[in-house]
Length: 107
Image 1 (cartoon, rainbow, N blue to C red):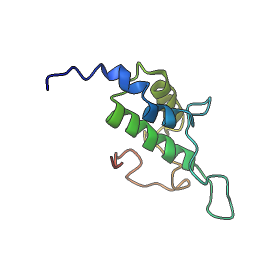
Image 2 (image 1 turned 90 degrees about the vertical axis):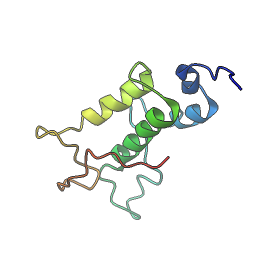
Image 3 (image 1 turned 180 degrees about the horizontal axis):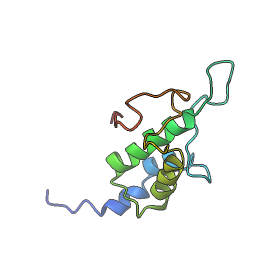
């Protein structure tokens, strides 16, 4: 019962983590499922929302840190959208809302 579970870095290369990471684009973003189908929804910046969700999952479920290159790239993508005021707009179009930097993903 006292078996060593392995390092956190071993989670970064797990099949489940790799399934997420295969979707990451060169700019660090993750595409929103169904994105680009303008007839279904406005496509303002749903990729920002999906990148935020996947980044949260990588940190929460796979113990990923900024030393893991895909996390660094995803964070870079998100911070490229930070406004001068400090919030992250674009998930709901360009309207202001207080939850742009609130963490709220499910496990």
